[in-house]
Length: 97
View 1 (tube, rainbow, N blue to C red):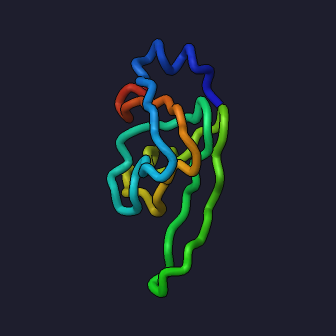
View 2 (cartoon, rainbow, N blue to C red):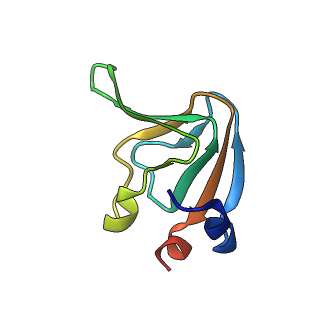
């Protein structure tokens, strides 16, 4: 976890999501660092038969989806708000700095 004050000083924006809103979808380009302030995010992907594989649940203070930032690939899974959420979102370029 990175302190919220550091992320905000670096230019992070607070983002509000309602339950059921997507943060990103599998195949999207990884352009942001995300950290949960409040709520819960589910990261998952689906088999060709439609079966869901939950890769993780992330809540207050946890970050998610950052590995693709380091290797410049698309997201291998989707991230969905399972509750009302407040996130910090910081652009890749600022995160790397």
